Length: 425
Image 1 (cartoon, rainbow, N blue to C red):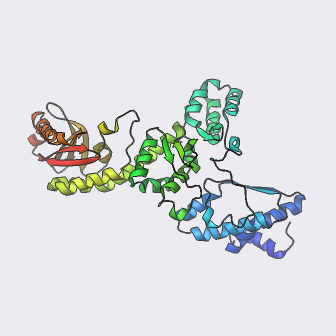
Image 2 (spheres, rainbow, N blue to C red):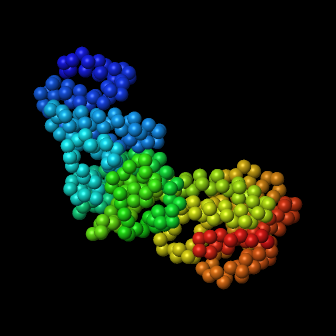
Image 3 (cartoon, one colour):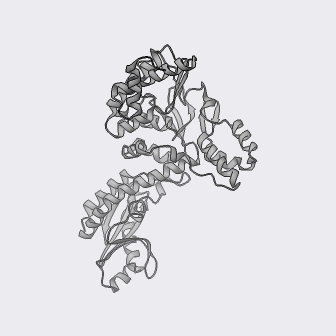
């Protein structure tokens, strides 16, 4: 019930899709006023995922425009409004410097690093057990725990509420339903993709790779007042965004203000790994044709530079039980899954007496044979180059291509301390 014609016109314009910037600034206040006038009860307002339009605005280069609207909307609707009983705002990011909350009177802020209201962020262990029991799914508790538990907030271990409810919905119809990755469908990945692209810095890259192995990372600084315009320039802001967005959880908080963090469960780890794989594929797809052109020309200097630039760009998903120094890193990530017109990338290509690590074969009768070696000792490199060359020749890796009249290009690559060294045979 709106008393003034101006207020009614505002509602009419918004309803008809003709709302102005000024209309949206006062819309929330007018809605609360109308509810109170009709029901004679001061309403409680819940605003869920307030930061989603901010994220979308950031991606679409209209951030300041949207911030101006939301800031005024919150101020008029939640601060200077005598018709309001209370307001609750939820979201992942506290964008403290965007002035959205400066129009409110000291709002209480409770994040996943704050124990207050911790049990209300999702289902507790006890609530999850009761919920599974009520649907006869007690025997699925371990699966559910592995996939959807793991968020440590205060003294509680919290289950992802959306994923848990979606699983129960499915398992009610089919008791053997697998625990699917429901969480990925609820979360936009644009910000995470930007963060992966910004991980060229050694410290952040090492942090990501350790997390992807399933391990925890210690002594991590977290920025809990995120600013969209600079969040990619600051490691603490990137980690804070991942934490408050649900990609990470706190294992332990230290007295110095740092945290031990990890990926909370199998569902999120799977989502994270899939995004990393997609990101790595995008990076390698852009650079691999150039690498092939350099190998065809025998331009070892630039081929080597490209491989090493790529090594520093991709994220290596290591097995946490594998020794870092002996891990066989790179060309599988660089070449094996890349689609290049007129080229076939063959991993473990069979020669007459053994298998070449890679054969790159074109439709116009060119073949690049690559043998890889890894060493922990600089003094072993010369011997490994010689050993690789001997393997290519004695095992006849290139024999079938020579028989078919292909132009042959043979290389040995030795990896030492996260760098590739290339030599032509």
